[in-house]
Image (cartoon, rainbow, N blue to C red; front, side):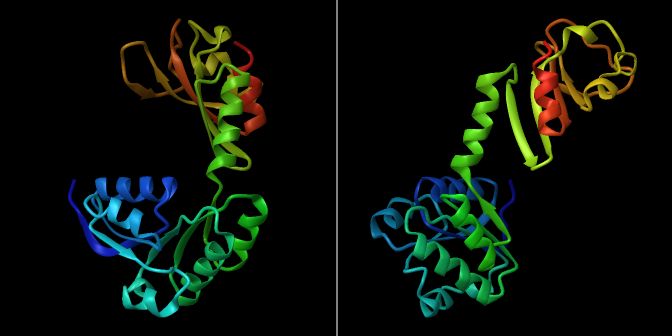
Length: 220
């Protein structure tokens, strides 16, 4: 993959969340500037990341010397130090960085980050907890909630639609969901159309409101 040599993505905080994100961004060809105040962590990732700096992210001048104020994209991945998380996000916002993602450890923390300038607030523990709950309690094989009122799920094809064209099965009318993809055993996913006929063993990708997807997945 070609390296994105444009304005680097700043990742502040090299805990589990921040370090995994920084390494994945590098793998995808992005230039990354990783910042953490702990020398142990910056040394640990010095060989994996292009640019790593040991800096207090609440220090305005230190961040400016690194060129952070010129960044277009930044991720605040600070976990347990709420004060540092909030102050750092506020500083990045004051710099005028247009795209700021910030990790929150609670919904209250997330609301504060939103108020001080985070464009996107991420709650990884909450999001993963909700995702796993859907998998544990139903027939879903995977679940992603994109927005509060829209989700995608992977689930076995419903028995009531087997051997019938999707437009004949009328699943959208009955459940309010849309089947957007179908996977046959041993094959790749393909886009679903009105003419698609589901077969025994098929896996489907459905989209719709979370409650509607849950109802559809429970049908079997």
